[in-house]
Amino acid sequence: MGYRPIFYLCQLFVEFMPAQEKNLHAILEPGVNALGYELLGVKFYRDHKPSLLRLYIDHEKGIGVDDCAAVSQQVSGTLEVEDCIREHYNLEVSSPGLDRPLFSAEHFQRFSGEQVKLQMLTPIEGRRNYRGQLIGMRDADVLVVIDGVEQALPLAQIAMARLIP
Image 1 (cartoon, rainbow, N blue to C red):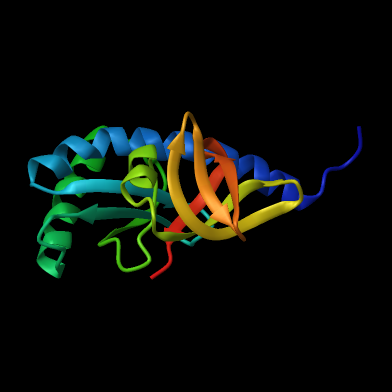
Image 2 (cartoon, rainbow, N blue to C red):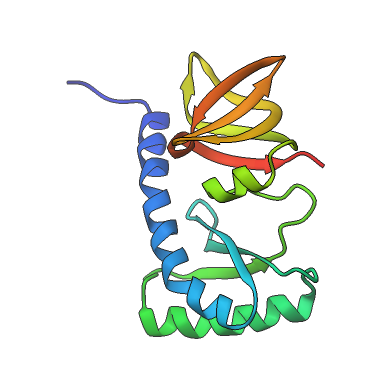
């Protein structure tokens, strides 16, 4: 069979991460919601030393430092009880910011009409990075107009998506 290049191993690792992030989201969302916030998404970065668990929260009145501190305290307790991360990590709670990350089909639908940049887990027709106008969702695909042409990109293959301010 032979050796595989290092980037292949990294690609395999990235494909396993969304499942862990979805699990963390499911565990943490009830506590965040109980405080009155929306948990937009969870990202877990193992390539940082120590690892980094980043949560994006939102509220109709915006997010301030005190909001992040309250959610951080709630989430820390939940993570300690659940013991779902067995390695050393730093917790970061953040507002979505102007270049808001998009995580779910609902997010892609909510921000239709906005400019977006996307990065795919694996290239589609030789391309991993896309910029264009977000149209919304159709089935399990994100619809984006790129250079005047509508493209359907599989939501499950999107590694990162952000609004362009």
